[in-house]
Length: 514
View 1 (cartoon, rainbow, N blue to C red):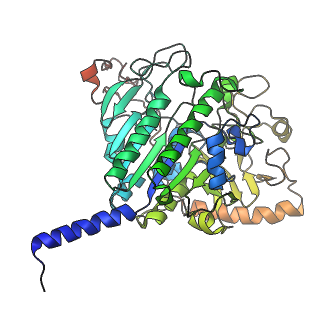
View 2 (view 1 turned 90 degrees about the vertical axis):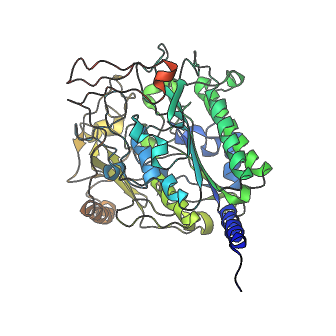
View 3 (view 1 turned 180 degrees about the vertical axis):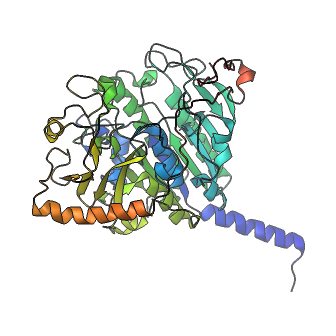
């Protein structure tokens, strides 16, 4: 028996829609410079994050979860590619172990050769949106819609001018592929007051409602930037925290998380939506009184100590993830990539090495992969590695062990003289070893002559040797430009007359729109 063509068409269309509606939705919430110790569930004494604390009690807490780098751009590239920055190109070779951003003097961005998570999800019928901070390149070829996202509302974090509380920097705000305005002017941020986080929340809620109405599986990458200085919170949250403006910001973000989870429940799709909350790197200690808390951990953003890369992380999936659990599985933002592919049923491309592994066995069944290692990079250098509860530093920013223990001259913004320093000491021949279970603050190096040191270091050396044997660095994208002239303007900029092309007056100096 043969069906008429129109019946076959409707049958296939129904099967496609039915299959799509059964696919789990994915929401990744990535904060900006939020510290491990900023949430009540992680021990923050003010207890001002009730929604995130509730999310943890209804889901699973991951206290041993790491960023891909102690800096924004490389960490975000790691999340979306499942690969270390040294592999995906988000590093620099300008100087040894130099951290690299993508601001005025950077010419690179995410390469076409990298396959981002939303591009893979598209093969299963997903629609994807990024809200907030992109930070993987400013030029048209690097924008989100060129790399798998269907929608974009936010900023590339391109600093066309000073970035401080006193100035009005030209930071473009995009709607999809076109610039629609600027931070601090079209989306005002004045003396720490702005409705931008509320706009980001509403954008997220509308996207969820729209895709659910269309019976479409979705990926929402919600990446607000309010906890990155200069801080901002809406008027309703001003002065409501015991922690000053930074606490106000955290309370507003916590409220946003609560509203998004409530929307999932309202739409009755919470059991079909996997949500993960984390941060791109540790709190920025250089911000001092306007920064977050890294809890018991040493240092913060830009460093490869625990405070720079261990992040507050919660996974939530009612009906799938048992409530009130804690997993000490080592994890990183690169594992988000592998976990999402595992949830959706997509095989990653086989032509490259991935650093992420699926966390589903740990999230759903409590299994622990004891062979998992965490590699801590700055620029082109592997600074440290964690295997189990042991962490070995191959490079630090100290002149001696005594200075290391005293905390002198190695925590950016936190040394006794107040001078930022990046002086490094090579411990490759005899790495500094710490047991993070009994010494999470990395204060007491294990003596290299002890039996414990000799036994633990054997496994670590093996892990490092295997890692480096399989390491093929990507083309560095964060090198400071020299003879390149960046004479361009964001798409749509000319329509609003807010961003002019800079003259190429000096071919040896990067020039940018202003």
